[in-house]
Image (cartoon, helix red, strand yellow):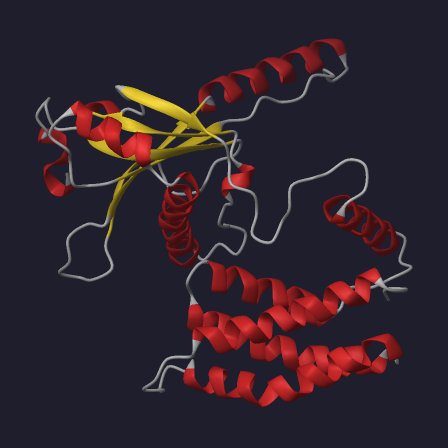
Length: 306
């Protein structure tokens, strides 16, 4: 596909994974080539299309006109646009049976995760290019629909396809299938709801390390290892005094574990600096982050969270 995308002949079929999200992703609609090296071949072609934007604008105008005439606003929710993102393999297959074999034998979780990672790389670059701190990555679990299939070049450029199959969205990392009644997933959801209520009522306050750990997790999951190592050092620097300051005896062992890990975390942050000639070690960063996350989960699970 690549630069010759528009000239694809009919017998060339392009494999894709496609997401639909109930909000605009940020970058303008169009086709984008994703490369890892300046002189490299495109790894993916991303096709973005926003559906329903004109209907939304029309609905808003009509609602305002009705509100102006009656003096009351309509009680109907405002329609929202849908963003369709197609992540396309730029190397075509020559026959439909090859495309069908790919679809029948695909590892759904791996293919969806790989497509989401490519889309998130683009959205990350968009956040940097636009200097918009509110632009964000996405999770497959947030998608209204996920499908995989194949299309001719011009079909997928317009958001259509020759054949596609709906896929179940992947669950977020670390989540478990909900079991009713009881089970870890339900218990975690209840703890989350209790914590939210406490925060909203000002009976509790978030720790600085909680937000920093979340940022480190996002960077690590999206393959930004240097970012993750830097954020993790900041998370540890905040976590140790914050957790020690609460005087929680039930967390003493976990705090001691984090103290032992801190020097290794600092070494990884040094390796993440621009002037460093070495890269951080992913296994060290991942292990330390997981232990910090475990300590924060234990803090929320066993006793007051302040």
